[in-house]
Image (cartoon, rainbow, N blue to C red):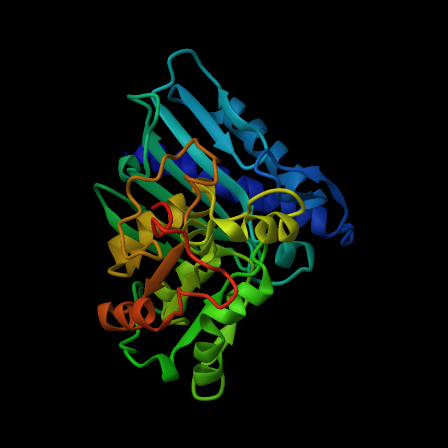
Length: 320
């Protein structure tokens, strides 16, 4: 496992170094096309994607395949033993703006079958691009970390939604549907707690591990499943694509969150472990509710308004 740890941490550090060098030249913030999943790809994404393949081709000492946001599945050796699921930048927009919320996200899973799932992940690494702080975990060592001012995990004890510090997701999510679902929770918590939009699932989930947030909510995929008639709204917000949580968005963060004691599920309350790591289909994309305490997680599941005004459910109640 040490070889794999060294590979994951070395890869993350290399991507960060390339991005920091690029940032020193000035922020271009140019869109150069779309990822296979349909998300806009910025100039920093191209830098990070190149850095991933360059590093692994030079340093991988076990037969690998790599699956990235932009490049899909690439076999770097015959009969690869592991697949690395990499989001070279989770938080492209804050990274493009020079803010703190961008992270390199890497998860490793044995490639013993053609459709590995999140349950197959055995090691994961998250690295903050701006600060260099990191969290690593594997099945042998548990969690290790560096660059934080205190030991991790440091979960809060918050149980009251009115007092929670939480983040929500809007990219590709029609604002009017999100407002109908949880505007009352925003109003309830904005003054006595805190509400944030980071545009990075990885950063949001990792902030629960660090104790800076109490919860993270991304309900888009459940809204679509429960109310299929909203698909045109999601396609319009996503410029023709469904943009919910892709496997590479959450593979590393969910693995680490579980080992940190975070209560994390999809928006139905179901375990995320069956998520296929190499499938971008909207029915394999996910929703997520993560909370520092089981009580707060339960409160959130019960408080979000799933029967949305103007979005009539199907007679079957949607597809889970």
